[in-house]
Length: 354
Ligand SMILES: *Cc1c(COP(=O)(O)O)cnc(C)c1O
Image 1: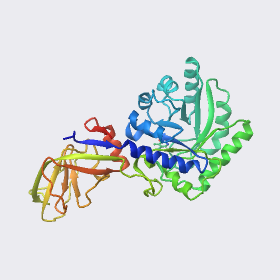
Image 2: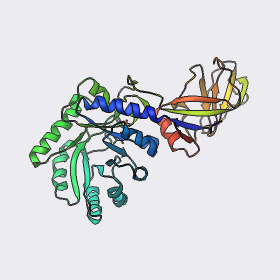
Image 3: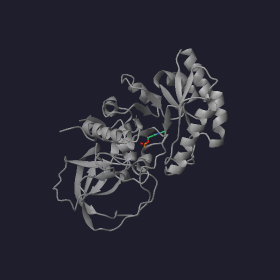
Image 4: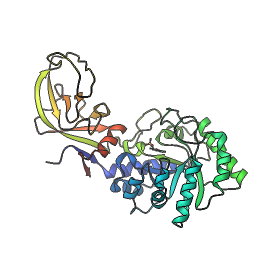
């Protein structure tokens, strides 16, 4: 028997998904940056992305980039740098995404101290209201950046559909493209990377609406879970199940669906409500909210329903399943972004690479 609970990762599926997306982006002259943060940058999985053809790897955390030190490909830091980490950043990231001049100055100092050139991509906020300079502030920032030693401005980029849910289209990404042209002309520079967003930009690419100057996308979820993220649709020809949760049944009993007694609070301080479905066959699995949010997992056996979870127990309804489950059996789940993130991060979940 294998260790439970476990996160099963199919390297072949990750490689296939990467290659399929890399090849289709290449037809639009777009390079792919493979984003590793949702699986905490497990090196074998990152390596599958490299074998699938990504040009760069990227992560939000320097700690994760450190794990990728032995993979010989340029690496990006995605989250805006902390000034307190400037030294580590110039050491472990070849490129970082930036929006604060004071921070870029700190990176400049760290790069000079380490005797290297640190590359940066300047982030522009096109309305999603997460990171990035507002458009009318870009020119003055570039003017200052170009004066700094140890820093090379290699591109501009944007991030959409993260905080504000703003969907990428030819209009907002058109502004990024025009901005790149204008900066190249006004400052007589060449911007080699115009990074037009994350997995939410794939739908626009598919519809051939991507402005021409955009030549890079940073992809995590689409490669790993096979979905574009502007509308949440599965992408044809790639796998949605490269990652699965497997958990073990530790109790299996027929019980009512409504608790017996006065209802106070549950383990998380909420007052639960129950629908009476009579007596059901309930299985308890040895995995819980400490590892995963039960609303972000999908049983592979589609006759299974999820009742809920406490910190260490997941309770499911197996009454309608065609399988005759027994205590000790394993139950499989497909994953959404949030659940993959939780499971990859939990030290109580074994990571099985297949
Ligand atoms: C996480 C992240 C990505 C990847 O997003 P996906 O939706 O997983 O493709 C891209 N860019 C930045 C800045 C990020 O933080």
